[in-house]
Image 1 (cartoon, rainbow, N blue to C red):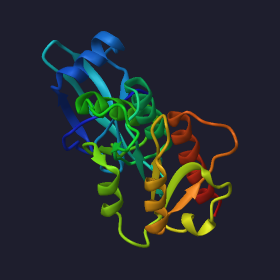
Image 2: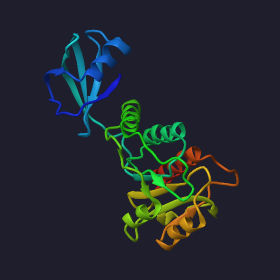
Image 3: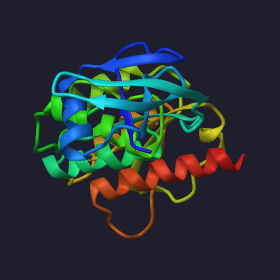
Image 4: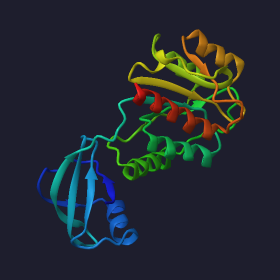
Length: 236
């Protein structure tokens, strides 16, 4: 079934009227849903609500809740991805694919070698919301405003799990970095992080991880390291 995120309370049963214009447009004009068809509604409460459409009008979508079920698709590992600002299309690809994998917080980084500086928050939030709808998860990731590398490091407490991707690092992650439920992952810009930034992570107790001998694009590295972290935590 198609899934849609609502920023409102959803009843466990009974009638429900949807007034959000983008949602109405998606249902009627894009997907061309009809009366009698069902969709899934969710609002970050940990539950999926099956909604059967009774009528679609230009003003609203009318229907009723037929079923409520628990949503258990969000990963137990809370990944905060510190993605250095990269080209617009590549950055948006990272948002989409890493949301599908289960990243719950995106922190855009302005590193020493970052070329792009700006972020279209409205478009970024639309991308992650649609990725959550598509992947069947429940929690919409948060996206912060871009911050400097030093500010990002200073926001992380000592002893918290930090991994930075760079070819100078070790090939195999130390398993102690995957023992908790929260991990901070740094992926650099097109030119990589500077030596100063890499050393700052090491001094803060973090690990520098190499993803192999091949030089990966920034967006490829993000998907690779998030997948690795999820695979290792589920293996334990």
